[in-house]
Image (cartoon, rainbow, N blue to C red; front, side, top):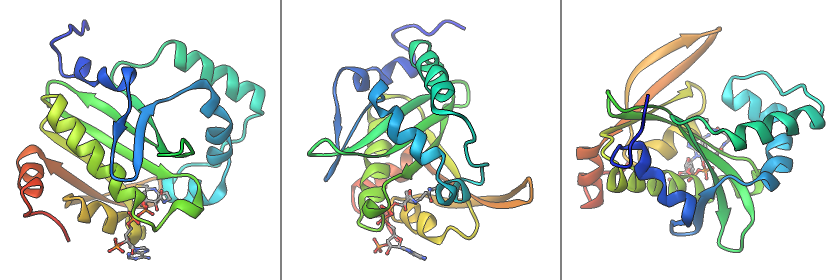
Length: 196
Ligand SMILES: CC(C)(COP(=O)(O)OP(=O)(O)OC[C@H]1O[C@@H](n2cnc3c(N)ncnc32)[C@H](O)[C@@H]1OP(=O)(O)O)[C@@H](O)C(=O)NCCC(=O)NCCS
């Protein structure tokens, strides 16, 4: 599939040239030096539990090889993004993935890797910033996500950013809540009608 400059995916490109600012965070493209934090976070049993994935069990050298290869040849329907504070501390990541141009939608994943930055509003800041960026700079119309049914903090964070539940899903013995926001709801939110 060829993605021309005019496609929705190409509209993510400004992220590669600069940083997107939220209230207290910046979003930037991933860099090779993120590998140390990413390895630590993916090897963290607590974060794996929140994500319903197995704890990473790879030597750092192998992880680094895969990481470098992915950076050299990024997938076109997936945009991993680093979250940093205004003083440049990398505190987590979020990813727009499964970007589907035909359906005009993307799935969103987020984690604040550094636990000392959780529960302080950074998650809402990131999600609001991503929503705003996606709907302002691409023609995608829907952002959706899934979160474990017991992860009430994540659900509260997403609800406060305007996401609403639209279903449930069982996978590998885990129960997920499915949530979504569309362009129209986001625009209403910007004019003050969204929030929980
Ligand atoms: C989920 C996550 C991204 C949210 O980001 P955050 O910065 O911690 O969240 P925020 O502070 O912006 O918002 C969380 C809200 O939930 C509330 N909250 C915290 N714990 C809660 C709980 N157990 N039940 C209900 N609400 C809770 C907070 O008070 C806050 O609401 P408020 O703004 O009204 O006070 C972050 O906590 C995280 O990365 N956690 C670990 C990984 C994870 O769960 N990823 C999500 C996978 S879908």
